[in-house]
Length: 496
Image (cartoon, one colour):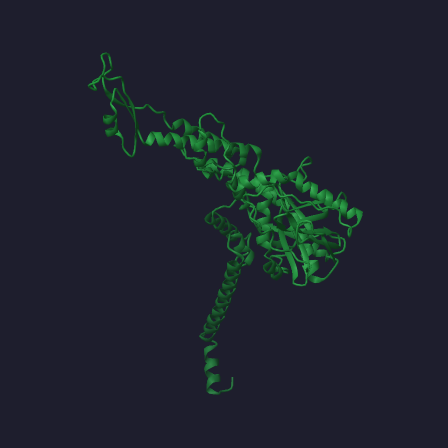
């Protein structure tokens, strides 16, 4: 089996239990290597249930939790699922967009590895890594060099882990990634060491692990953790899907179902009859309503006995849906506060909609969070690009200027295109920005391709203007009173 990073596990995980990695001691590995692998397998086992919980909440596959008081068990199958958690993750992920890289003092973006980025799907992998990081708190990106070229792959925290390098904070001493899962557990595993990659494979459960070693970049672990808001007590980061958010989601689902049940009764009136014989009650039944008949004892002729109440038809009094809607709105507001989202994004509609200032304030908190997360992601992203450059160039040393490479992240504020371009136009008029340059059009919100085309069109137009100005100057000179006779004499062949 050749070394290579595959497209990731292809097993349907929507209804499977938490994934467990169990690699026993392997004779072909050293004691230290076996010890490292055992520690990493234990780390994956310890967080497997928690990661699966986040997975099902993000995909809205969580089980309905009934308190057993107001909702009969037979109605649980009608419970609605809420996509609030996916909204919280995706709204933040869309604000963390990597547009490219830049070197200090350079006007244009750094493009040395653009062909490799396109071939390996680097930006797409990075985007998926950021989304997975927000779901679980940490995600990983690894790079290897195989006979097919450099490969890049993102991994979720359900498939990968590592051990910290105490001498280099935020970086790994060794990493482990499951490349393929079987019905019996991990089937293919890659272990990343400095200067070496160990590939472990087993075809079936109970088979011996096959060990292959490959030389890699000396002194570098090409496996990097992407962490969301790491803390001293939580060095692996923390999930965007917090426990309060999961609690509010469960509460919202119960409230929604209670509202559905009340709506069924509210929409189809329930009628009742007092002192109503069965044959008469049958006439009041319809496909859109129920009829409850209460009859009294009758004599042998079918007439009500003496003292029976007067026959009448009435409607069962039902409660309003308003309390359920108010509770659902309150739950959504609490979820919005916990997730830094505006209530509008959760479908909460007020009689008085949120003002522009209120929306800006909510978005401002989310943008600040995106800025902080982007700064944390810059270091592992640049480290990964350094790995790719070294592997692509078959080098072991980075050039000094490449050490200063920086990420170019999109502005998370997501200002409107109109306001963005009007602000840039003001800078151009003030002379603070050079018109017609690629970087100027990119700052206006245009894509790299469009910015390049616009800059080239601007240069062509400027050349045409310059040529037109020269032609006009030449024509004016030919028509000058002192120059015109000289030109006419030269045409006639006279000496000037």
